[in-house]
Length: 154
Image 1 (cartoon, rainbow, N blue to C red):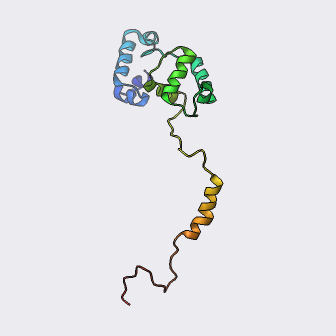
Image 2 (image 1 turned 90 degrees about the horizontal axis):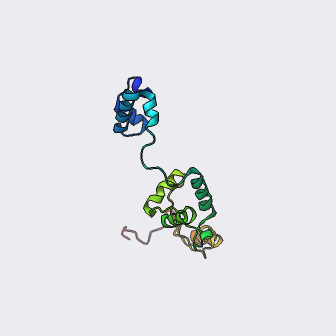
């Protein structure tokens, strides 16, 4: 309401607050009818969250412990696994497709595993890259030497 009272139009207020213009229009109408008191009584918009802030904090602790603690073979959290954890821990069902909203709100992001073999030998790879590969790699010819692909006539 402060922005509207400063003379900004509803569209500009909506852009600055990152809300819909209809929300700003609704706020303005409430303010005209009953002032600040009417705005405070309006309550929150949308559906109430099914997990409390305390439960979300506990969920994050469980996520940090890793999926192996729940009996999964890999250390990869999938949305299905997170939905399963929420249902087991809090008796609240979430569709796996909606779990990402909770994870984003907790500051988590979608990441893909690197997909490297467990048998991978990093030391052998470094040795091959530094020693073996330079030895077998083609080297430029010294100036004056003819290339095997030369197009010059003899």
